[in-house]
Length: 283
Ligand SMILES: [Zn+2]
Figure (cartoon, rainbow, N blue to C red):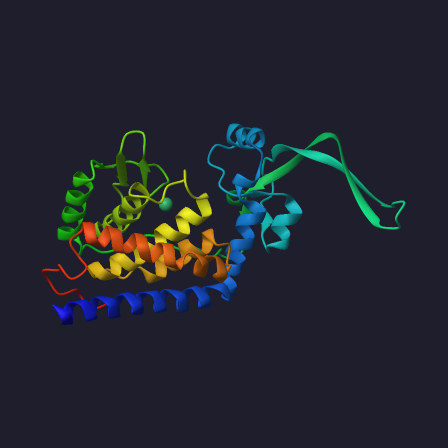
C-alpha cells in the first residue's frame, strides 16, 4: 500500500510540475499571444448584448468581428464586396483639464452613438490563425468513462451524451445534469466528464468568479485525468491559460484549491490508495 501512495503522490507532483512548465512555455509563445490578442480585439463577447444581437441578426454564423483597419493590423484583408455588419459605437469626447489643486484630470463624455461597419473573420483572408483544441483525442478511456458515470450517479447527477452545440459539455445545476458532446472521442468525454463533475461537486459559478472556477476546475481535471492514466496537459494548458488571459500568477493562485478538489473527487472515485489497478504511465 505504501508503494501505491508514493506512486500516487509522485504522479500528482509530476502532473502539477508538467502543467506549470507548459503554462510558462505557453505564456511566452507568440502564437498564443496572438490568439489572446485576437480574442480581446475580435471576440463577439466584448460587444454589448444589443450589438451581439445586431451581429447575429445580420450574420448568424459570425464568430469573430472587427473593423476594417483592426483586421489589417492583424495581417488580414477584408474580401472585396463583403457586406459590412453594422454595430453601434459610442461617440466619445475626451479632454484634459488642470483642477484647482493643479492635478491633471481626464474627462470622458459619451455624446450619442453612431453606426460603424465591422466584418466577420470569414469575410477576411490572410495567414492561418493559431488554433488550439481543448479535448484529447483517442478511445482508451472506455472503462473509466463508465466508472465516472457511476460516480456521477452516486452524486445524484445524470449524464447524457447529445448535441451540445459549440460546447464540448456543460453542467446544469437546476437539473443536476451533465451533458457531453456526441462529437467527442471517448477520451475527450472522460476528460469533459471529469471537468463537469468538478463543477458539479463544488466549483460552481455561485461561489467563484467564472475565471477562478474554470482555472480551478481544469487544473484539477488535469491532475485527476493524469491519475486515471490520461494526459491532457497540452489541452488543459491552453484552456487554463485562456481563462487566465496568459497570466501565470492567476494559475498559481488557484493551484491549492485545485489540488484540494482533485483529492476530494479522487477519493469519491476510490483512488488515493484504494486503487485497484496500476495507473498507466503518462504519455
Ligand atoms: Zn468549466
